[in-house]
Length: 178
Image (cartoon, rainbow, N blue to C red; front, side, top):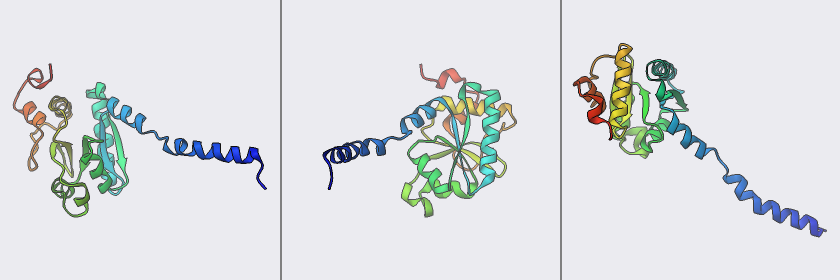
């Protein structure tokens, strides 16, 4: 037989359960993304994570205000989801993933086409950005990477507008918001 205090305890626990279950670090993730330039990679390609770490380190030295960090998704499909929803703006991908991800084809069909542009060729990988990555941010990243030896306009996939502006000699002041 249940006593009154047991019934009250169960009611209290039931009332608090939804609040406890809904607690997440999502708001902190938003703040973290606003304060850091995240470069996505995925676990199925360890080379992508190594490249993202190298880029983050390079950008930390040449563009410290970006607070660049590598972020690793479990697989390319999750990375596609993060790019499609603009939770990530940059990613390191092998060229064979860029086309299907951009077209929303194959395993990436559930996420739809993602307007990817290229910031830099990294030998076996490419640093890609969502097309809506701010042009002045792309310009700054491109300028920093050009200082580290990635000093050619990328070929193949459409280069990001900020990257094109940098290589065309457009001053940052002309593309930065006022």
